[in-house]
Image (tube, rainbow, N blue to C red):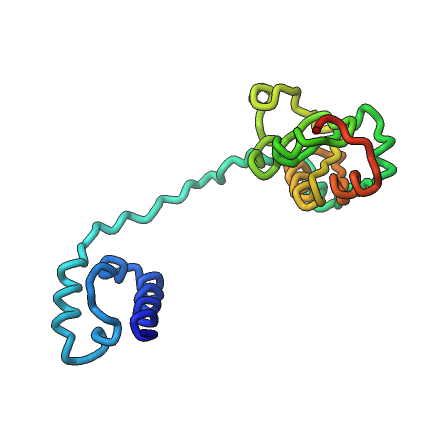
Length: 198
């Protein structure tokens, strides 16, 4: 009973490792039969029935110009600077000029958010949001795109997505980037007010 399972597993492993054998998957030739001298004719027949020749594409010509990057900064060193880390108390007293951004998915945002949150940009499903031109950003989110000089503070549920969003923002040229690593879990755990939700 174990032998057929092993044979199927070996056949699957072989077809993943050697793409030319994928076309032989439907051929009912046990793996052990492929290695025996008596069954070479069976192997040859299966091979000739299933292998087709395809034209080999010409190698790609490389462009002399590098591809244009949409995510350029005037100061590459700013990408390496760490984000400012905000605590629960600092988030409670953020100035109104700071753009607090929830990067959770819309369903999470609708269940409740930190008061003062100015926009919801789900980093998992919209990672290119900060790369968009201002008009397209406004069409997609219904809000003005933050300026490169604005202070942005990102939060999510537990801090992972906010770190990713802060990294993306820095690479897109935003200079004043911060994150709230405790995020929503820390906010609720410390008894912070909840805006919206049920």
